[in-house]
Image (cartoon, rainbow, N blue to C red; front, top):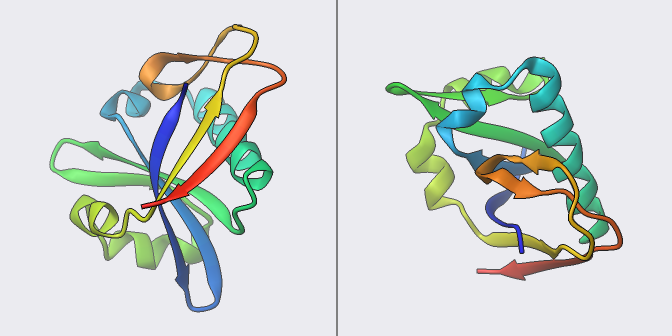
Length: 120
């Protein structure tokens, strides 16, 4: 069952779902990264979470992120310690039918899945 610890925060009236990923995310193409974010966004909506997914990951000594340009100043001002300190939920779903690899951590894709959000 894929499971991701997330930081679901509200910043200046904007709900943000921050998903920390493995540094291997840095080596995926832009299209692959976008597909992963789209899947995480879809799963978040299905689980009843409000907000936009922003992926973050370590790259060397810095934190990289994919976020709307208007949010860049905020994400440049934080680091992974901030993200991990604000982890407050876990997003998970159960695979029913295995498919191709979609998500970092090398989990398989699926159809007809069950979604779950837990408050930590």
